[in-house]
Length: 319
Image 1 (tube, rainbow, N blue to C red):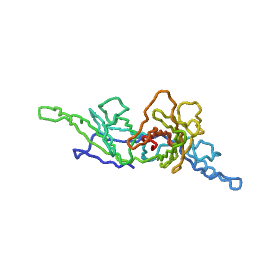
Image 2 (cartoon, one colour):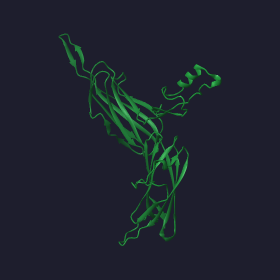
Image 3 (cartoon, helix red, strand yellow):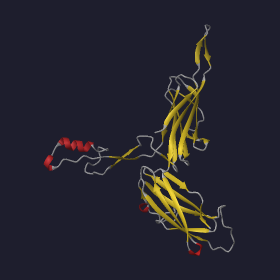
Image 4 (tube, helix red, strand yellow):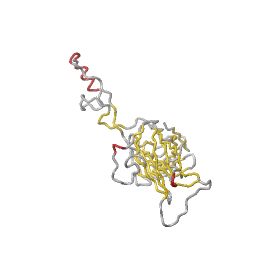
């Protein structure tokens, strides 16, 4: 769960409250059906209990399948994984009985290596005047690329409604006070997919790339694509399932997409060979005498359909 910390310059209640909700795709809710009454133990009460044990009451009680037609949202914050897009809804709500003006939301993400100001989507208004019980909502998205502690810092600025002050000769309006507060939401980004690679040389100047993919997440994932992007002068041939490169070959079958459960491991491989070209080209060689062959790119989807993406560093063969 994320930890929330609040920082405010005035020790008194604010007119605006802030709610931060993580956006997640729904999943099918589970149902654990009770057995129906049999001819030997006919009971209206047992039939009623069996019907009520279904997540969807009108669903056929003859179907004991664990998944129901109902969609359900995650009950908690959940885990944040590298390669996925972290999305939140930021909602500033007017908790008073008067209009609050110039309400503005800004956010930044603090990662282990940098602090980045985030662009906010959703409501197109930069500032808004909120009537009682109304809210200003923004959507924030951030691609998680680093492992470790992350902090989402949200700042809300607004102007309180002007107060009427009696000076004896009549009431005069006092200017509204500009106030601000800041809340920090802390969470940890973890590895969802670890990649271990090994490159060996073959005859004829060819090379073989082997990669071991391990699902480090809590739930299953579906591998959408495993592609080897080669440097100039090299060509890669996939030795994996049909349509694994995801390059629009028209032969991709969703039924053939590999599924990896939690802690499952899968091996993939690519055959690399030098291109035969008439024009000469210079090989990309690193400072440590390593012949650079390319990068491995992987795409997957989680159980709820969220997309993840991971790209390795430049892979090479020692010469």
